[in-house]
Image (cartoon, rainbow, N blue to C red; front, side):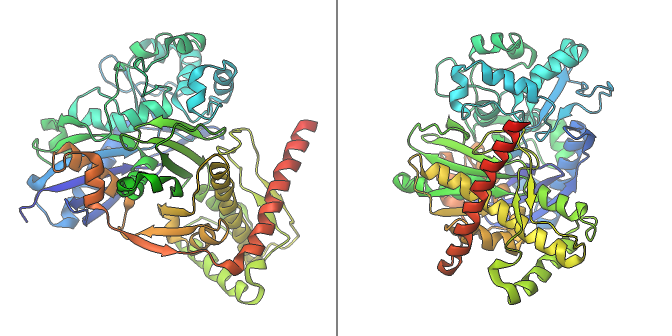
Length: 528
């Protein structure tokens, strides 16, 4: 095969994934490699960035082998990753983000909530930058984590020479370039992409990060998504199994890659964009919407300019734990165990059997609020707690299945809450484009349609997130003149699942109870 090919890399919470694509968007090969995650407490989680790079190289080499292609034909690569924070010293070496001082653990994982107090402090400033993050700073963003680092590990802060979002770290490892993506900086670092002065120094001064731009080696201006950051270095090319003829595109936070793949092709009809949103659902869930209008919504991150495509504003809502919540339920219940794919399938199969008798009303008196790791959207409350109402002494496998089913319902209702918040503020969303691990869960895919009332579109591509990064790679390699044209040319379509009208009464009732439980929780919290 002499055709120019493309590579996409997606680094999630537990693994690095890589794919090889044609310029028309067809996936030729895919592979995955695990990454290490250290939990040192309920609110703390750390990665080893060198372990992530090794996993990335292993996954890509295997993907190339699975595709059966020559590395010399791969002319572009793009990296996405979770919004985790990588800290390096002035020599580019690993620098500890852990209280035990072990430099191997140099990355604060996105889901780490050690900086809740610092996030609240940012919110209290009332600064203009909060306008672009829904009015409330999240501990999952980088500024509060940097505040925590400076205050709690001053020895690491003193030695710091470059600090990067994980996607930018991968691009740096690949090219040596310290350019940063407009997506990472605008969505996680309080960079205001549409202003002439992107960094708001007065805000950084207020939160004690007057030296952040210097310590992190941040540029004055961010690089647009898909911009050519240069070729692979000889060392990176050798490690990745590619050649120095491969160009590297400015990447994105992981959810944005999936949104690019499924929403990018709709850019040809921008007036219809506000009817669609992307749901990127795996360990956590992200709801991504795009618009031609600068429309802030309380409790949702954004609006951000050009963080998916130039010419559009973007909003992001989400759930900090969705797939992770189902895993937790399986581990927590006495009839559960290690939440393997096989056990999830067995639970789903049994739920289908139980529903043959009880229908959608299965366990109808059992209700769940899914905020076991806070509520990212639309309440923007990292201190929110999960709630289960309706438990009995039952502890057999069927009781696990009933709780699992109602937890799935709760996750879908949480998405409905986000969508209804968007629609109350000028959107008209009636279509969800679902990507990620949840597409393998038949219960969730059914519920995302029936519990929200939206049409659900499942992409035909085996991995929409990797396809999004292949689109970035194609733009960087010059195979298309602009990123939006790459999106249109490389789209793979999908299968639509409309909501079942007969399911609406059940889930309208469930949603009313869901909202009432939120009010009850708020009242109880006020009494504590």
